[in-house]
Image (cartoon, protein in one colour):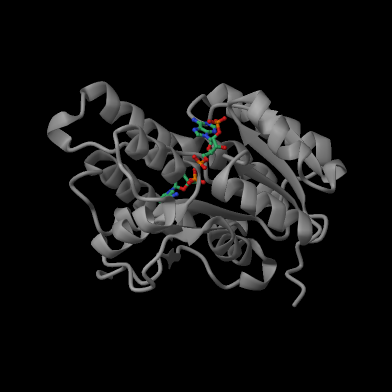
Amino acid sequence: MDLQLTDKAVLVTGASSGVGLAVTRMLLAEGARVIAVARDPGRLDTAMAALEDRDRIHAVTADVTDRVAVESAVASGAEHFGALDAVVCNAGRSLMARIGDTSDEQIREELDLKVFGAWNVIRAARPHLAASPVGAVVNTNAILAKQPEGRLAITSAARAALLNLSRTLGEELAPEGIRVNSVNLGLIDTGQWRRRFETYRSEGGDLDYDAWSAEIAADRGISLGRFGNADEVAFAIVSLLSPRASYITGAHVDVGGGVTRQP
Ligand code: NDP
């Protein structure tokens, strides 16, 4: 099926790794043009250099919590391609800590990243998306937004804020022809989990990655018994970006291998 994304210009934050990189690769395969955003220029360049279709990538470094830097990245991408049809607010990380062990500064940083990390991008892109006949936003979120975990206390709360905001934006931007949806992740095998595995090994753990991740999947009650991978998430994101999803807005899709136990 043609997803009707050929030549569409899509800005992806967190494009240098994991889900964002998989989304970038899938969009390029669909014939789209990608404005790839991340903070570390070396990592971004290395990731983009490994992709085909370099002429359809415009890489820009920006921290999504920095409003001015995001405005500049959006303007640069829209100018480079002459349009901006969609954005994927994906950049982020999680903070593994219970609320009693989380400093006020960490709480502010986490809310900043999850809320402004998306809102800065959507606000700057809004006029371009409104000018596109197929304006769309997809926010990468987490099942934690609906199913909080004490060991990820403030990340869960910040995720809930973003999910709530996404639904409001779905309503508010609909008259401008902009759709806003969310993809909620369970446990996905990306850089975040590889780093945690390295920590586990450095602290003396002796399981290999597959056994370690299967143990975590069982502990979290994942029906499919394994972590997901970035391509499985990218498929959901790219599907929601597609103009074929023209009647879907204010919605969310869970990509969690069946971990969802609550609505
Ligand atoms: P990765 O760590 O693999 O990649 C994160 C990407 O975001 C990198 O490109 C990183 O590049 C970029 N990034 C991080 N902070 C910023 C920032 N402030 N401004 C701009 N870019 C930034 O993560 P994943 O692919 O695993 O995660 C993608 C999203 O999904 C994140 O929002 C994450 O929180 C969320 N998620 C992931 C889950 C999982 O199990 N993997 C579960 C639930 C949610 P750089 O550091 O150079 O900026």
